[in-house]
Image (cartoon, rainbow, N blue to C red; front, side, top):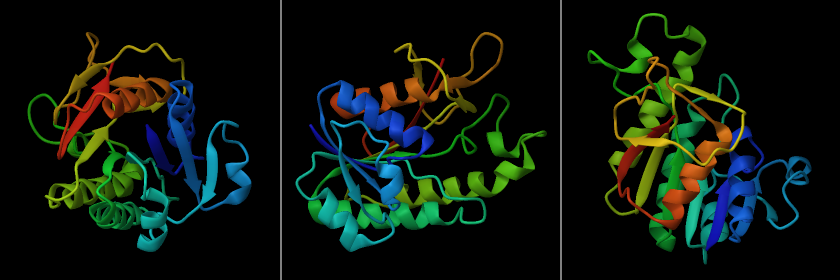
Length: 210
């Protein structure tokens, strides 16, 4: 497949690029900072681009089979997630390209009802990004043109090992026998590429965790 990855130099994005390259896909890694692009695998094509600029996204997604976005805004710029989502949706509507978005876990439903982000003890410093992810998902759900899918990670998403194992859920937080919800960034990338190669989710959100 021909895959363009926006946010390719971030923690999740670079793992997505590495996973896609390892599977033999033709990958274009996109980021705004050309210096950071130098760290991408040699097999990937590095391109400077702005995911908030619809013309940039159209040019970079034209001819691609799939666009993946794993952008992560700096603290204080959380609303940029919504701008990126609406821009990518508009561009992919023009190019007819499938879109996979890596979002947040805060809006997932927890046992007993309600959202994870509304549960007592949810870190206050995560509230702005969680709220932005709610709007990001709403922007996707309002779009009935693009073939999009939105991946919410587990509650705990950390660097780790690639096991190739995970469980899939919908709008509910997936937890293990101890009640924990976690997954490595490496296995999140595996799940994303599995969805890319064998699409099962269309215009809907899904989640993955151990």
